[in-house]
Every structure is written in structure tokens, then in C-alpha cells.
Length: 168
Image (cartoon, rainbow, N blue to C red; front, side):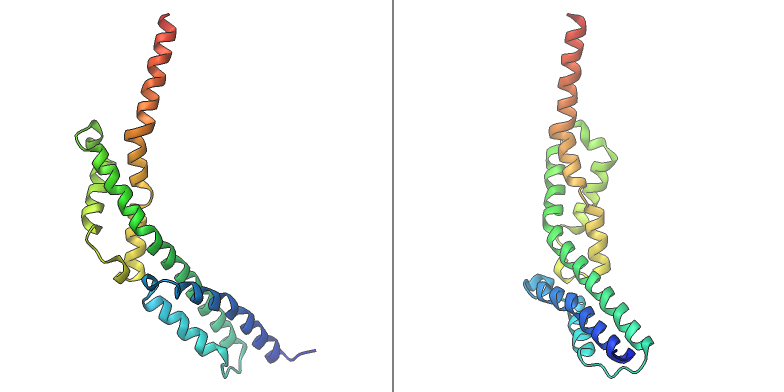
């Protein structure tokens, strides 16, 4: 049987596989550049042939690799989501202007969020700020759009038809 050191070295090689795959994905678009991608690349380089002697050192490497992979995946997802989320908010605000929906708390909140983030270079944002921005935007623009264009008109039509059927 292999020694504990050999087993842990093999486990580290396996742990690096998803990290290398994630780095490949993060290198596909220049928009994904930044500290997160750089940290992942550095960790891969550091842990490819590490001079580890203890289980604790390996455990720390496993934890760091896992954290950096998740951090990179989140950054890529946020970079991809930002433009469409911001556009959905812009569309929702535009469709709600001049209607009763302008009085909704959601409208007021989305207008503030839109004004805060519309001119920001989201690629240059750090992960924490980018995550906050995407979380604030979420799917709320789509929600507002649906309220204005789909849900309320559909409910109004159904209630009108129901009322007409009851009267008839």
C-alpha cells in the first residue's frame, strides 16, 4: 500500500483537476480577469509540486483550492449576469414610468440600484462589490417588467371575464 504521504500527494493532484478546469474557463474571456483568477493561477502553480510534510499542510491546500474554485465560479457567473440584469432593470423602469407601478417600493428601489450601477465598470469591481451589485439587481427587473406587461394585465382580464360570466 502507498504511504500516507503518497496518498495525500495523489489527493492533491485530484483536487487540482477542477481548479485547472476552472482556470481554463476563467481564461476564456478577458472580462473574467482580476485578483480571483490570479489567485487561482497562483494556487495551482504553488500546489502542483508542493514541499509538504504534514497532513495539515495538505488539508490547508485542499481548503484553499476549493475556496478559490468556488470564488472564481461565482465571479464568472456574476460577470455574465451583470449586463442582462442591469438591462432588465432599465427595461422594467422604462415600462413602469408614467404608470401606477411607479409608486411601488420595487420601482423606487430598482431606480436607485440602476442609478448606482449603470455607469460602473463592473469588470473592475472586486468580488464582494460585484456580488453585492448582482444580488441587488437579481431578477427584480424581470419581475417589474412582468408585473407591468404580463401578470397584472392578465389578472385584470381574468377578473373582468369572471365578472362578466357571473353577471350573465
